[in-house]
Length: 110
Image (cartoon, rainbow, N blue to C red; front, side, top):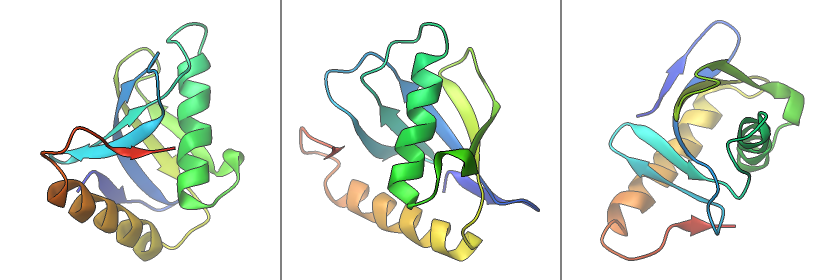
């Protein structure tokens, strides 16, 4: 479901969509697709992705770490400080919502 439990927290697979006109997210198969305003220049999109994920999971920015893919659209983030079950539950709710509304022309917008 886009996430794996690790020793330090939960690893989340993200497909980044930088330079978007709106910030939102939705599931695309097993990957969490995240659209952010920030461009893919000088790490701005990566920074915003970390902030966006921190806001989504209700943790501090310092608790979201980019593990893999700094120069790729496909990334892996580590979210620390929450029980794995809490993160998995939030992702599962988002996945179910995304499946229900998959055919509509909008996403979970911020």
